Image 1 (cartoon, one colour):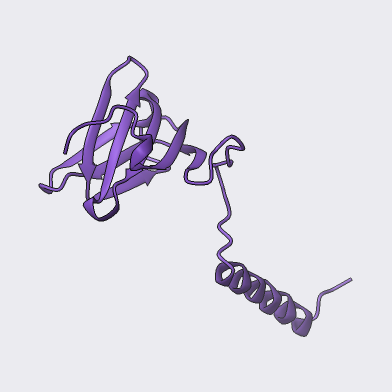
Image 2: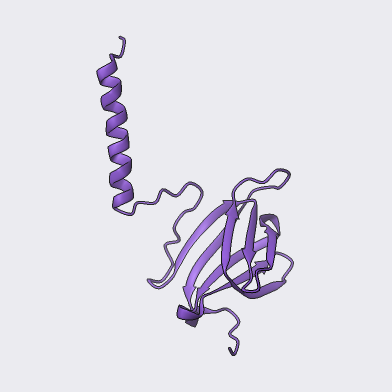
Length: 132
């Protein structure tokens, strides 16, 4: 059975239409993340597979962390004060810093991809509270 050109065009049109509807409804396909069922309504948790996490401090200083070193990542929303990044390392180290930008790199030459739990929470859920 050969496919005629009008059938092919309808298939492409239907695929594009379906993708547009999914985007309009806010559907976000999860390629490597899966939603945690135990998360409370004010937090979002996913297991994300990536190779490197880059972030920029408010002083425009850039940092890079390999996923193989991380136990988990927590993003804390401080409202108008911005976003705080909490990094929990496998060796027990901990980093707490304000961030201006955050980028997860799925593939980086020479680096291993790893699944890491990433949680976005309100300020009340900060793991180690500090005085601002």
